[in-house]
Length: 456
Image 1 (tube, rainbow, N blue to C red):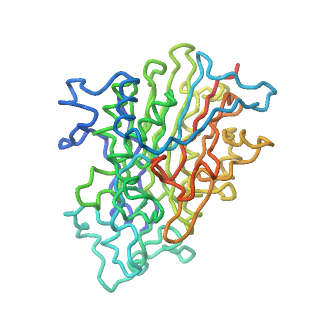
Image 2 (cartoon, helix red, strand yellow):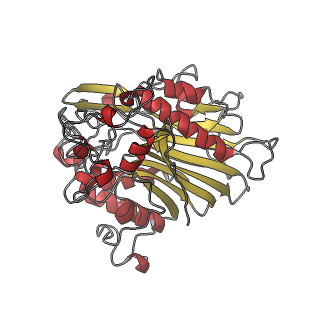
Image 3 (spheres, one colour):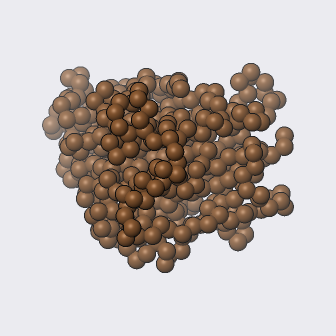
């Protein structure tokens, strides 16, 4: 397993240079931290002992036993065969097809400083770790305004690019981890937020559907739990942490959260992988992506798969749009013929992500209209085959109830065919307290699709 690093270098004027000084690049690799211990619930001994479970049925029984006989029932979801625009109904996963799972928020902790007071200082926003200090060359005077230090072109405003005024709430930290009681899920039982319980629900979800490709966001238990356990089940994985993960500000944290992509190594061969830090107007942000190229061992067909998690929260639509444009640029480079033949067909593409954007947002429209020829798989559940579901996330926080479609599986409509789609639960099945719950480990529902390759 290997990983090529794609570093986004800051370019442009003074704003970019200052921002680049404040934002360290992604590390060249994402090795297992030296102090990380394997989860004793699943793995005994050292990693090299191959002591993690390798029998899916045994691991599923372990999850069921840990959750107890009186557990809340799992959400009942079934697959629906769909017609993907060519008049042919799906037939399940053929021998050279692929099952993809998008979305299981697989983290444990909430950033204790995620909701900074409006008077918080910049050094509290961009703190890199508990003992780190800002470089002496970029110290800001207590009374200085950032826009007075970094003079921009007369037609540009810094707050329109990165919104890093000294009195601004945290703009770059992406608080969305669960489990420390600071997440604001006011109707969720505290025990449902505990990682000691959620990890079994997450693994149970994976084992129930046995995907060939698994895309996850908000992963902060990659090295100690997900990677060793899924490795034992036959998956290879790639992980890209956020440069400023909010998880690092929680006492006793398990490391940074980020995006992870796993694939079944018995079915697919890895041709290449890269970690990308998404930019907005050539300025690096805190959101990341993992991009891989795989080859089906049975058919020799190649497929490019990517996972990302765009900036959350209302008011940041412009930033999600800019991140989406940068992401599309990377995807266009990914699918080009490696030999440079401009007439060669592009490699089919699967893009999974928590876009934090409704279908009405600009970033969604950019993906739908991109020259990559992408379509959203979950539109196939609609009666007209062209409407997104009513929700992929449903939660109740102290600020109110939110039901929204934020998550998508995009695919190359000319090269891939949607065969089956996992239905979403009804309002009654979700329950009055919404998500997460004792039945489901995340505030976002997993999306599961079966695809097949079309004839060239």
